[in-house]
Amino acid sequence: MHHHRAEHWIVVSGTARVTCEDKVFLMSEDESTYIPLGHKHRLDNPGKMPLELIEVQTGSYLGEDDIVRFEDIYGR
Image (cartoon, rainbow, N blue to C red; front, side, top):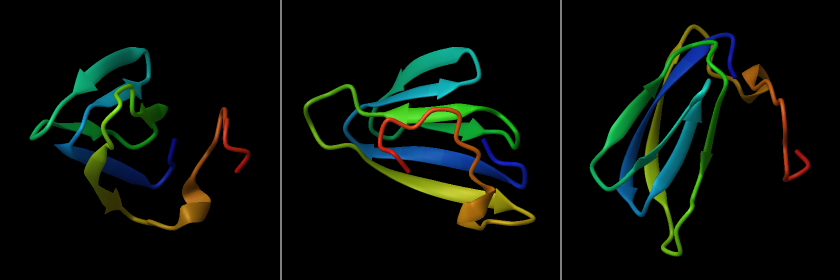
């Protein structure tokens, strides 16, 4: 989640599994979604092919210290 920015994700190749609040859905090449400011979200690759996407961030502050982590399997 972010307090100061929203995100727009566009899939370039592969398949993305997106969780935004309570919604979970798949996106394929040329599909996109908007993650509103303050919404809890997660992205993962459920497929075998590499996932490539473009993330566009908008808001009053875009610093990495605006990331609120609720769960982090990578230990960040």
